[in-house]
Length: 414
Image 1 (cartoon, helix red, strand yellow):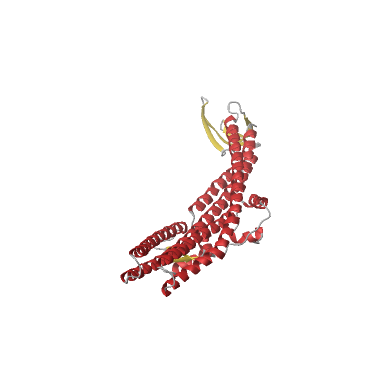
Image 2 (image 1 turned 90 degrees about the horizontal axis):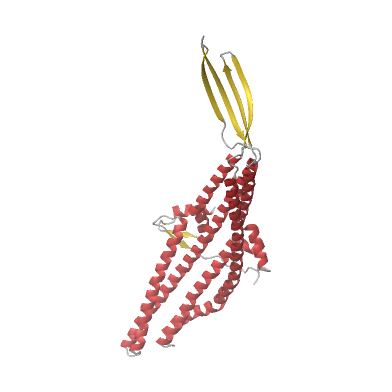
């Protein structure tokens, strides 16, 4: 539904601006992601391997025709014969097919894991654009005020009410604020370009954001709860486990391939021009010179590599989950403190300094200091908000869950 809605927006909205919610942006990023397309394509290779391993035949049947001319002194006789032969694997084929089936499961889990990673990247890019847009708007507003303040200081200097030091300070602040606003606009343009890349938007289209969803107050009893959920839900763990199973079964198939294969042949022919021949032959392919040494060695190497990869994946999952859980608790607490205490006071000071300056209640220097402190606090809140939102999305990705589902999975409470 999200991708369909975005397609409609692309047709209705102006070609240079596409307004998206974070869910719409994530859905489109997943739908158009090249890594996901590539990983889905890799599944086809494993399915092809499974299709070939389904039959107990290591090769195609062989059909031969032979014709012999015989001179009897009285007449010339032609003998001919048709032979159809097929090699049959006795034991290894079933294990080889089971290994290919596990390989399919591993490849499909890799697709799910790629979706998880792409969704996290899209959400983080969206948050970066939200923060960049707000930073650009805030610094532009601060620059406009600083420039008005500089003009006010010039008039005050001309009237002899302030000295040159105060006038220069106001002019300096105006130039610095405008420079910061231009840099913030450049950062916003770069963040929009990065999100547009993930969304595969046309060159003349620029994404715009809406408000971020509220970060829920998640709660869990211990880190073991997070680890237990991750072990069940993480697709990269499932992929590594399936790969190890495939390698185990492949090693078994390689060892069983030492058992001789059976060759069955059926033939029909004619001899001396009158005798019809029909027969059946059964033979064994003796592992005399080639005893599967290379295949067994390669299979054992693959099994060792698959086991090592599974162990490494388990360590990565544990580290990601523990880090994401710790970061979320602290980042959200910092965001709440900023939002309820620091941001409120900073917003009030921005308004009050403008009013106080207009009413002549504070000096020009005090306005510069108070205004700069308030704007700095507002800008710092944007960094805190970005950290908290990123931590929320990283925790969801570490548990292979949607961010909105974490409250149901873990519970809530401050």
